[in-house]
Length: 425
Image (tube, rainbow, N blue to C red; front, side, top):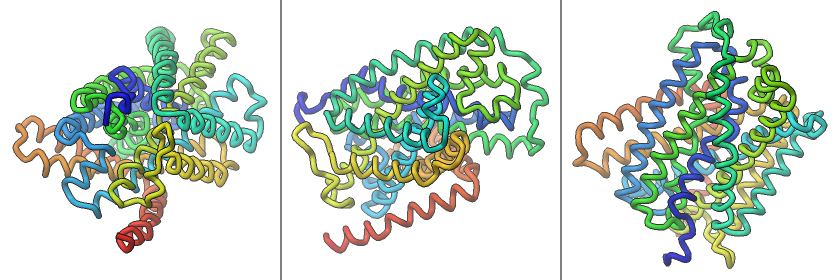
């Protein structure tokens, strides 16, 4: 593909990675972590370490296999079409369900600035759907436009988030972290549950490996963007979430749809709360924009190899896989609409666990693919891969029985598609 058809450069790709990681999680996740108190820090540490190990595995595979599709390409190279399809399908489920969660978080953030917009569950769902389809329209305009939007929105949310985390340290009170483990559950059980939730804040670490077909010099650009993006976004997210937990009373934190906004309002006043609400809204919108870009690129690679219906490989005159983009947004809309009666916090928690469970399958297979593809790797790389594998398995168990059940149902829903494509082939 010529340089003109590869519009994503180094800074665009780093912005996409940071933007896809720093999205809704950092602003809404503290409410989901409230029942675990200071014990959540254990899960945070494990998630950050696991995410960095996974990022190193993805970065290495991007050097070895600069193919379009990320985890799908690695799985197909190592294990063949069948496993490749399972990974592509699972990751696609992850992406469009993640988009539903991010859109819901956008509605929650908007409601903190403009309460009338989310006064009822129906209004909240309509706000979420509006954001989802606006991002779909941006991506239909072309990959370059989506990449430029990512740079602007990443800068607008990263800088305020870092400033909030550093300044907020001065208002953290020790009582907020007492007792250490208010849930009363065993610490390892808490750490497992927290790791499953906080892994949501790191989903997107693989972002740079998915659209490699439209990336300039992918063998250099993709690994750099992956490691730089995960490191910056991971540290900023962990700092900000921990500060919020230390600033708010536990009973307030558990029920707040926008805990970071709540913390800024209580400490610095209404103006600060409104400003943080604007930042959170921009952040969620930026992440949604980046994930909507991925939802079409994910199915494109599999369709080009004949594992997804050919319609998913159709490009418009701007080079956008429009069919995959529209189908994915429709599915995300159905998920939002079918659960709109839940509170925003409950809906967000359910959708992030579903998305996390769906993406852990590609993570697991990617690590196993690395073992087969990079057979002559140095010992330290093998230790990192072993740690990434153990972390992925552990986090998968931590998502819970209900989430695993729904994830299995969605995964099995892809079986008829695979059989149909095999029959057609």
